[in-house]
Length: 186
Image (tube, rainbow, N blue to C red):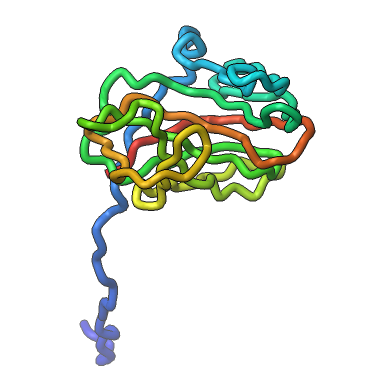
C-alpha cells in the first residue's frame, strides 16, 4: 500500500572528465642497485670546490653537500636513461627540498645537437619538511651550454639520454634535496 507521497526525483548534475594522465616511473629507488645508475657531477670538473654526495636509503635518493661559488658554484646528480622518454610532455617529481632554487636538467641526442647542450627548467618546490609533487613541463625547458643560455631546438623526448637535478643558485652554503620518485607523464 502506498502512502500517497512520491519519492523525490533523483537528478544528477555530474560531469564526466577524463582521468588524469598516467605517469610511469622513471627510476626505481626501491632497488638497491639504483644508486649505481646516478652520477654526482660537481663544479670540480671546472676547478670549483663545491661538494655533494648522493645516497639511496629506504627508497629515497638524497643529494646533500655544500655550494662554493668561488671558482664554480654548482652541484648536480644525473641519471643516464636506459631508453628515451617517447612522446612524454613532462616529468612529475616527488621531493623534499631546503627551499633553494633547484632545476631539472635534460639532455637529448637529437640529430645535429651538440651533446653539451642541456635543457633546464626550475623545480617549483617551496621547501620544508613535507613532500611536494612538482610537474616540470618540457615546454618550459630552456636550452643552455655550460649554464649559459643558447639558441637551440626544443628538447626532444624521443631522443632523451639523461635527466638530472642541479643546484646553481649563486649562493654559498649547505644544501639538501630528497627525491622519492620521478615519473614520466604523457
